Image (tube, rainbow, N blue to C red):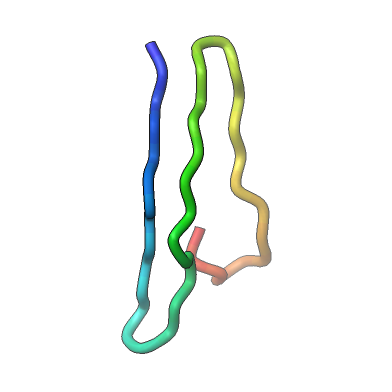
Length: 41
């Protein structure tokens, strides 16, 4: 099993937290999102 994300954008009001990202996570891989507290992860 794998996960594919394409063209992901996330807005908080008018503030763009994530801008058009794409990625794949394949079986056995580990993915983490890093950033400061309150960054919208």
